[in-house]
Amino acid sequence: MPYPNMPQACDYTAVRKEFANLFRRSRQCIISVDIDGILSAVLASHLFGWEVVGFYTLTDLWVSSKSLPKDKSDPEAALREAGVAFLDHDIYRSEIDSIGHHLLQWSPDTPIPLHTEGRSSLNPNLLRGITKREFGRKYPFGTFHFLLACASAWDLLRGFEPDDEMTALLLHIDSSFVNAINYQDNALDWLDWLGGSEARSPLYPICKRMLKWSPRRVIERFKALAERFGSLGIRPRSQAQITDPTRAEEWQGAWKLIEWVEKDTGWNARFADFRAEALVHFAMDRRSCKPNRSLFEPIIAKEPFSYAIIGSGELGLNYNWFAGRAPRA
Image (cartoon, rainbow, N blue to C red; front, top):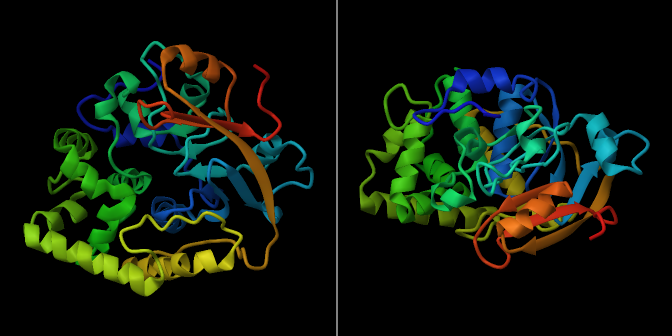
């Protein structure tokens, strides 16, 4: 097996050992531009001293010019030389580290070597061997929650006690609470694998507060969160997605969100000064198709830069290359 078989519970000690290089300190990282990516970055900054130097949306990649080598003619070579990690994204390269949570494999016998060799892709679905054949069992939470569970299990987050408002925000990431309500058996299965609500669980600080919430309290807390978003300039009940991170006005709400999280948790975020630094833009050639095996295998054989199985419909497989670098049919 390319990854350890951990059907009963996550072996956090094994994960830390296998991905020690990924979690090295003072790294530069590139994030998704939504709540999951932003909060994952705040947590990684606090835990490991990571600094956000770029943003990735599957159709565009923006990276601080200062973080890249002078020769940027080959984007992948530049990213490898810079040693950046992608956070809340799954990059199909054995030499570019990434932490994500999307479904990546069609079946146990369809190889995805650039994810499973080199220990560069940390993904809970890969750790458990969940594939498209078990689509209903895919990981239902956010990258943040998995990173939080790892950090707690590694005893890196002592005294983390989120209040009601922060708990609501953490449950809102990637619509995790809604997913848990809609797919209860799968959510419970993953909670058991992550550690559940036991007193020694890495997720206990969140779970124990949830155990005390009545149905009315749940509604009240999410209503209050929507109102808080509105006061920050973020569309209520949204995932605070930013379509163009080069536009300062799109970041106004995000910066206020980061300041709130920092104040409430005591964590310290590290973001490059994107208002002063030049950003290098790389366009991506993004495509979609139905995730049939007959389509999945030849696409993966052409080594897209990143991909994810997000559904079973006609556009269920998303994949891309850097613009102008897609292999010919």
